[in-house]
Figure 1 (cartoon, rainbow, N blue to C red):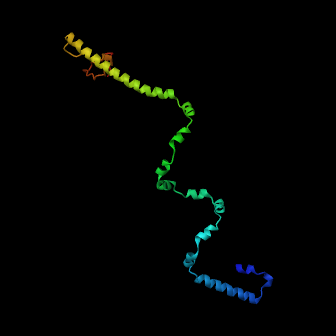
Figure 2: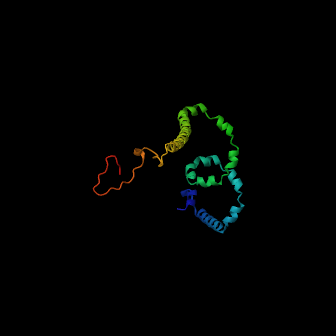
Figure 3: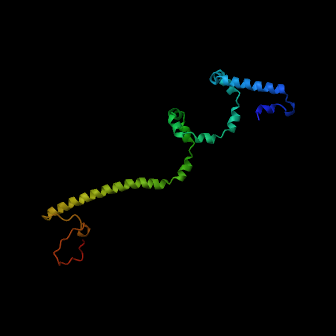
Length: 180
């Protein structure tokens, strides 16, 4: 059924009206076929058309999540120059909004101080130990000279020295204190 037939009531169709309607349809088809759509679109004032569009109604019917899912946020951010934005930020205002008491309550300052001072104390203790070892070696050399010993003393007690490889003849027993 032709959609244009619905315009006329079923009982009122007469042959002249039917012929006029067919002629009209044919003329409209010829006109539409003869129109250059590009020239027609060029003559349309899009600003006037858009002025008549209710943007709020369009936005209410638009699912913005579907649109945002199609946006490459990284590409958008890559095109944004953040320097002018950051130049407008009042850092003093931001800092004044920080609740310092709440921040201090959430921070274990004792642990922070212990860690930072512990590192300094460890370094100082290591430096002192190094100086004491150097002093001990200096005193040891002078004692060895005063006692006129020709061979140097061991650098540590024998039990603390690293294990040395022991080569034994076959059948020789290993002393109980020796380590391999």
